[in-house]
Image (cartoon, rainbow, N blue to C red; front, top):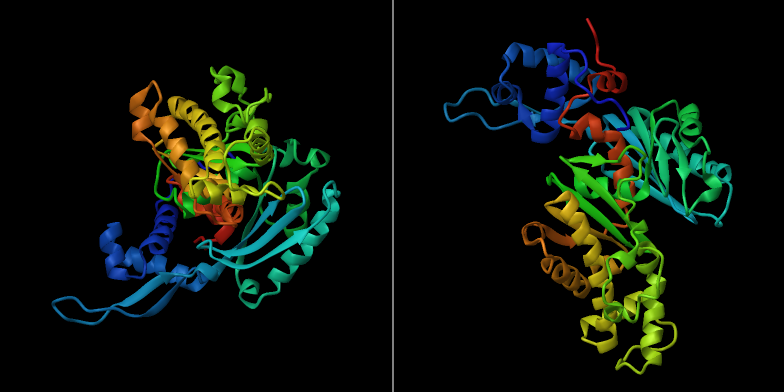
Length: 421
């Protein structure tokens, strides 16, 4: 875990404050009387807490509601103020980064993308990121808001204790750079560094197609392969932060009939290499050389064109997606048999949203020898957001404030600065 989100000091007043703040965020607008009734504490206690939260700006009064069937004074309604705080989300890739400003409801107010050359020193990239964050902090409402934290999504295995990339095939030059410390020292706010696919999984399960599900696997396909695992609505990282690194599965152990994958499988060492988009394009060229029937263009073929032609039942395009989807289905079957999720979300770029590909993935999963978990799981595309990583990065910051069932009282106190008698 990133933090110890345990139960903290069992002080009734603190727990009531934090639970009521969450309750208003999730259930509002709501009146004081409704809140006292639903939360089951006295109206006097509710009023005292509400006055505190109003004074600090974390909630606000928004007018009057309807009176009861018996008549009487119309109640004043209260709602959460999402702009009472803000979080910065950063998603860093090998040649670009996205930086976004979000409020406490994870609404994105501003977002910018920067480009840089592969292999650029991380310090140079950070200088560009600093300029954007500084510009966000000059926004009028942000000046009045509480900075909650910075979440960073980046490829590789993360050392959560030190806040560095400890291993990365994509960004080897950035390994062991003190990324968390640099951001925390500059902005004096908690910074959380997380693997990019795990971060996307969190974004999908808090705000996307995995919302309100308990056990979810987010499977990222495209330029490689990776997974984010949600167990009991919490992101599972593993003892060395390597949970979900399924791209290193060796396909030779799972493929009994090489001829079934004659266009794609050429003794690749692992599934990450086998399921790269470049392999799909090479397979298309191989099919053309073998004279397989197709209407696809020979030159400048793209993954998007393969998907388009497969939807029109082009024989070569369909065969390519059959091989690819069956291989993804093999990976899914193994994840299902080990983790028994209720939902698998297929994420990534164009491939993840191909209905033809999804059909072949589902078909392979249904053919599993262990039928019950294969038939129980639902498999569908992720939302398709280009901002899934950014949403997840902001979600990292809001996670134990508003989404985890356990209350991290100490962090609430640090972030919101509740008044103490």
